[in-house]
Image 1 (cartoon, rainbow, N blue to C red):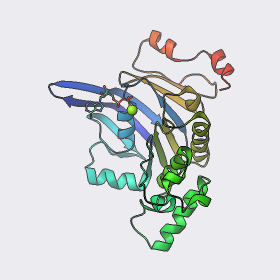
Image 2: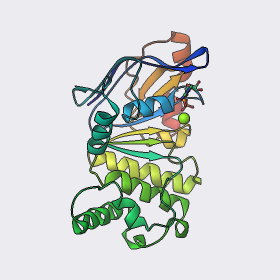
Image 3: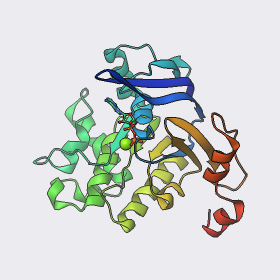
Image 4: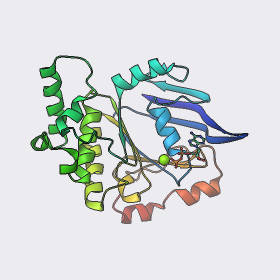
Length: 253
Ligand SMILES: Nc1ncnc2c1ncn2[C@@H]1O[C@H](COP(=O)(O)OP(=O)(O)O)[C@@H](O)[C@H]1O
Ligand SMILES: [Mg+2]
């Protein structure tokens, strides 16, 4: 359902041009759980912005459910986001003096008040926080706040959840809970794309795609069935990127 073909993204910074992504080809099937990893500056957020229809590529095509979104206007992109995509960020971006429930209701612009409330409560139930519905963000732990943010992403019933470093502000226990929750969402049929620089978090995904300098340098499934085709890099780099089979077995992957 996600298909990037020859995707590039350049930014102008004064006279210089920064190539944040180049020649990226990626296909993600519906219901898959993909982690995107890479060092700082490797293009992870740029990729998330494109996948999440927050920005368009400067080269190549992005097909989402067969529709080319790469040439769409801002309004058209906003419509796709509302219908198909749930976004989660490192900072939870909850409104501070607003209950968990009201935060989750926010993306539901239309519909009757009661229907919105019911859907928001269901989304909170899905993240195990229905008993915190009337709490304010500052009455919740970081992990709970991120779960509210996930509920807010789920409430529009998106087919795809995109999370950019969602565990970046959390301790390891809360991080693991968030990663497990994303795994359950994928088990329930949603496509999940998780950006992280933590190996333990990426290990929850079914597939790990690694970026370096704006290119995909490896693409490995976590079930030990070996490597997907790797493009765009030398054998030497790829060998360094792909963990040996034994190492992955030791890590419990
Ligand atoms: N709006 C922008 N303007 C100019 N350069 C940008 C912009 N956004 C990102 N970049 C550059 O693009 C590259 C990739 O950035 P980013 O996608 O944020 O990487 P990551 O999320 O992996 O840290 C970096 O060199 C960054 O400085
Ligand atoms: Mg980033």
